[in-house]
Image (cartoon, rainbow, N blue to C red; front, side, top):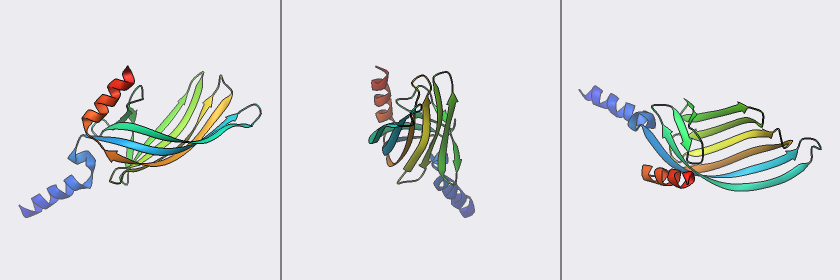
Length: 149
């Protein structure tokens, strides 16, 4: 019986996915953004942006949703780090982005990627680092409603 209790305690502490189905986070990230004109190769803009996102992580469906996004994205987990790869290519945009999130406090995150604006003949290259804090699900729901209006 003691070994069963010890095993249960170990499983519950091993991953937030087992303990809870959802994790809600408010993330602050400092993002370096460089925009370049593809024709001239000249830098149009080089700046740092402070970004705040509110996320809902669904461990059952293995999806993550930012309140500002149109739809959830799939993720994988390796060594307690969530990896979200975004690749898209259509008539207007080509996106290649990687977002990583440590799934244990202090919930550090990083991102890097490129966005090619085909119709505008420019590209954005970005990289960022930050930290997230747990929030209640109601914070996510409120932010989601505000972004929809």
